[in-house]
Figure 1 (cartoon, rainbow, N blue to C red):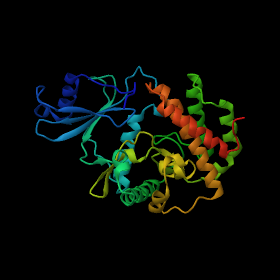
Figure 2: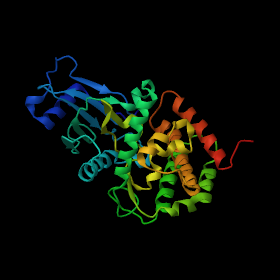
Figure 3: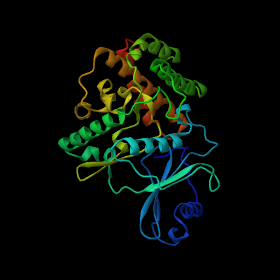
Length: 330
């Protein structure tokens, strides 16, 4: 997938990175066929699949170029991912990649990068549509259970993994929401609705956020496209740049409970062990959906999308969700 945040590097630089991470004996022969290829599933970081000289395969992820403007919540995303990987490996049984090497020096390129082993498995988001329904449901049940385990990790306060935190989830989520709106206003992105209406909807229903009093580790971006599967099992969860301490109900697996276009949440919730949402939880989940759809509309400008597919789809879903809050056109 194309994005202006993808920090592609010349082959000589990639070889230098390999040498720094694994030593000169592992640098691929420049004339060898197929020693490097770009992995195209993600929108944010560029990722390369690299075959080392001894035949082992690894993945190199490189953060966006310094000169590219990113959204507020995306600043320092690679550091967030590395911190999250450490937390998950230390405190859960959730399968995540190891980190072989991390270089924040900016000596070889203008951004942080890290290497991890290549995971020989299928991306669930890619194969999902061709799976039998029962098989897909089984994977989503597994994902629900893994997501619950991630959410079992408590935080000292709500907010970023590295702090500073806040004891109020209402304040933290309001800040996240306002950051997204400010990003959109800075670029004059058309939502199809007034920005102040978004603020008014949040303010009207913000009391539902006060029900959340225990900070929990959340991924926020745990879609099926960030799940690797093999032989009927989830073998890895990838891409952890958006993690923070918050309300588990903000997780992607719950999105379809209020936004049907995201699919069917039944199997995920069954695996998670979550009962039907209460009325207050429904309202809260709609607020999280509003935040998500605003992000999806606004990020198309920051990523430099060359078509309007995501923008148009997200705008349509935004209209439908606002109708649940009592706002319709005309």
